[in-house]
Every structure is written in structure tokens, then in C-alpha cells.
Image 1 (tube, rainbow, N blue to C red):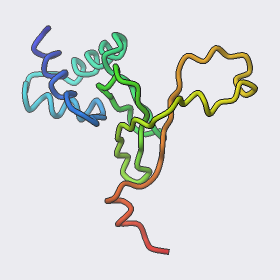
Image 2 (tube, rainbow, N blue to C red):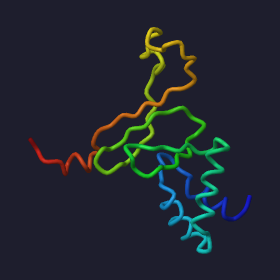
Image 3 (tube, one colour):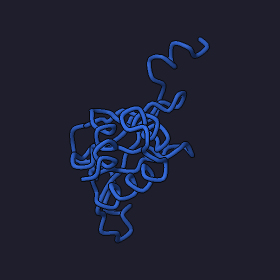
Image 4 (cartoon, helix red, strand yellow):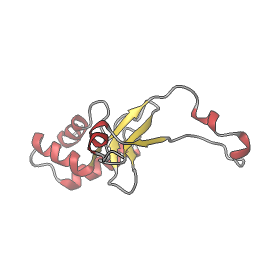
Length: 128
């Protein structure tokens, strides 16, 4: 593993990490100042291809990179600031899709996104 890849992996380490490529680059540059933006983008692309990192897109915002690729989970997204948290609801998410609504698809996966306001954004929201 190259020093550049190691630094990108270090930056992505942690729970509930959902950084943009630019955020990964900024943090990686603090650890390895000579790392280029292109190297970060290429490394993130390789990690996605290898299944080590998930690409998360919400509401037309910048793609974010989720290192929690090996543990099934959904996302809770703040519609104010864009904060993303991993959530692990109980039960089978496919149970909510009746057989008649599958239209013959052999469903291979489910992505659920819960939306709302995080506590900080909710406290800033005007009271009605």
C-alpha cells in the first residue's frame, strides 16, 4: 500500500464518516502535504470499485464516501446541512415491498434514506 493510499484510508477511518472527495483531500493533505487532488480522486474511485467504500449521493449534493461498506445499513440525512448518519433499523427492508410491487424483479438490494433535520438545524428552524 502506497503512503497516499494509506493516508486516504486513515482519513476515512471512523464511524459515521461521509466525506466529500474535497474533504478527504484537505484532511489527507494535513497528513501528507504532497498528496494531489487527482491521487485522492483516483484512490477513492479504486476503493469504490473494490467495494471497500460506498459512494453516497443525496439531493444533488456532492458525492460522499462511506467506509462502512461491509455492514448493511441505511442513511439518515439532514435536509438542512447535509449531515449523514448511518442507521441500522431492525427487520427486513424487503418486507415493505409486496411481491405484487416487485414487477418480476429479482431484488438484490435495498437502499433506504431517512430525511429530516439534525438537532442543530432543527433548533435554527423558525417556529411555526
